[in-house]
Image 1 (cartoon, chains in turn yellow, green):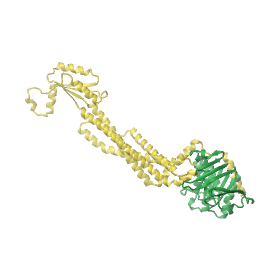
Image 2 (image 1 turned 90 degrees about the vertical axis):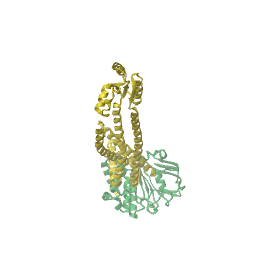
Image 3 (image 1 turned 45 degrees about the vertical axis):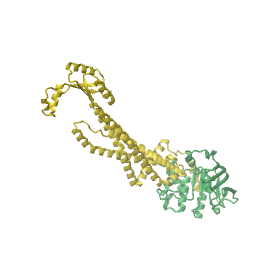
Image 4 (image 1 turned 90 degrees about the horizontal axis):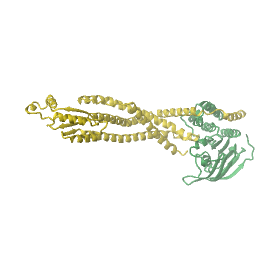
Length: 326
Length: 227
């Protein structure tokens, strides 16, 4: 009894010893402990963890795929823009001098990048080469084809509606019989791209919200198993941050693992689609190729997963903490 | 150390647990709260540990009005107060050692310091040899002592004990009371709620009797302490 008494006293006397870690090392220790705790919690319910990660992965893969689709549409649209041109069909009686004058005048317009003249003779030759009408052309006494000036507008300076204006301007020239551009289908493509962008944004937002709820719900269920632990921790002086930390790490793990699953799904999808795109491109003698996953895409998908994981866990953990009366 | 001024607590169901308590506990004092179950002993201790908030009145803890503490400050208040319940809320998925270490871990103590202190606490309650066991395989009395070790491990200024000997046999109960007395001798303030009058009748400490949420009798035993 006597010895125990001095024991208590000596224990009390050591209070001034360096008992607590420095702020940094205690911070690191606590975070390490929280991370290990989070891992432990995941391993306690591996099937739940696996399913959650799968759901998060699948939900994130669609926005990721949309991101790549939109990127491809935009690059495709750009290459179409580069190809857009205005064809000026000249009147039949235009002399070659008149045509030269007109060409010179058109070239002064700085929104015009390039002009190509196809004389009526040249046009006839091309026509014959393609042999579409067979010998029908030979029956005609004179060349029915007008001379054509092809104009390539500078698409960096002009958008489709401005190209249309340019075409209307050019049509005013007396020598020009008709000006024609494919602006209509260009416009359509543009609006479809916009439409797809907006739809994907809406669906992506919806799915992102789903991920938030899935992670939040998993954390909530997880938390119910740890209510006793949380209560005891709070009773002995744990801050809300201390209680919340393992849950945040759990959420982070779900988010990151889910993102990795999503990236894998998208990569597999790209591998599957790529040969087919190549085939189509070959068919149309186009140089269209798929823009794949870039470094920034990987980062943004991982980042989205992390933020969603943290966000879902934060909300769920706070609700849990405040639901306890301690 | 602890001052209560006209403290009232009414629960949501309309039950008045405390109806105007005035108390003054001096630093390093040890007092017993007595009274039948339902007299308000537990509620009183919960208010001091900030597990619950009073409906009215003022609780001053070391010159600080507890009502003025924000929810962010509550954890730091609890670190200064060790709480022991009749039913020790131990975590059965970890060892006795880890249960006792909990208050130190949440405060960010060094692992070497944790080891030193937890072992010292377990020695005080006589359970050092069982530190690696799971609490669930210990007897009720041993679990109770683990709870006490957990409450004293962070060397709190105040220990609040709610029926700490409720599950113990008379001899163990006496040992625990002796332990409390020793803690008191090194300057810790203790408030111990108990309905076991036979246990404390020979002890020379202030007794505060509660009935229906009011202090009805405060006396110091004339009998000599057996300690």
